[in-house]
Image (cartoon, rainbow, N blue to C red; front, side, top):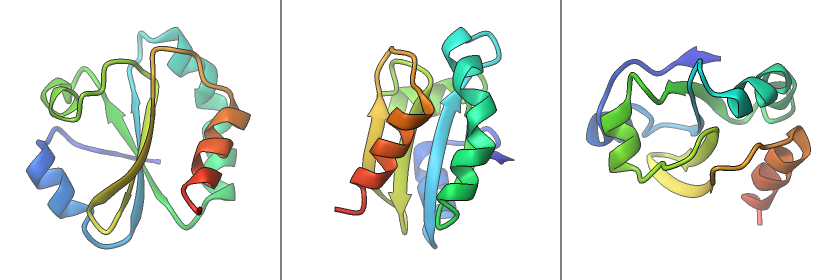
Length: 107
């Protein structure tokens, strides 16, 4: 998974304007983020039509604010620079819940 460098919403949206992206908002100190992290390589493999980007919430606190990301881990899907869905709440997320979210984007 690639790391998204410190950026702002306008720059990030421009940078991901070609293709499908899944932003994974996380932080090293977050226990719920550490819970889902081991499942991420499998999720990435299953949904290879998305480019997964790890977004360090602390490094990108302004971006998280611009995007109203209040809880982590959070997932935000983009298709050619347009947000098409988000799975963002303060709860722990399981592999099955993340897969259900991504599957829901196809409908």
